[in-house]
Image (cartoon, rainbow, N blue to C red):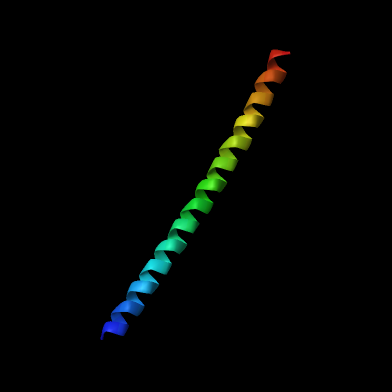
Length: 50
């Protein structure tokens, strides 16, 4: 019974780590997307100003 619980515990921790990594990846993608759109917007504004 104890080994069974410890197996569940480790798998839970592993899934937690995987979820954190997944969240971090989506966050990074989101930040990159925002950064690129921000740069594109800035370039557009500069062109309009000229």
